Image 1 (cartoon, one colour):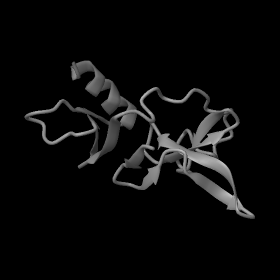
Image 2 (cartoon, one colour):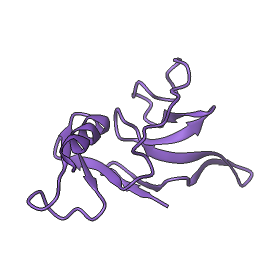
Image 3 (spheres, helix red, strand yellow):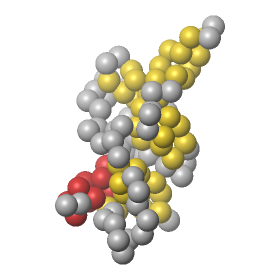
Length: 117
């Protein structure tokens, strides 16, 4: 299983959450493409645990829907200062390996995919 550590929190992809009587109501998914907080499965789609995020479970908008394609892959996202950074498993440094940076996790992933050959 994929372990996520965004610098804000760490969790395992598919880990159970929101337990009631020992039964998990949801499974944790990848980092929110907007804010980087952990997400959970929700009605066939997903929602974010950050109550202030536009993808939040508190937002009255309809179900978020389609999961990002980079979840549960070898792509990792984390905060690097004030920017989000996306790298692949095995990343050592910027001299040897590609990376993408952006204002959101999704922007960082998009930049990584542009330079990753």
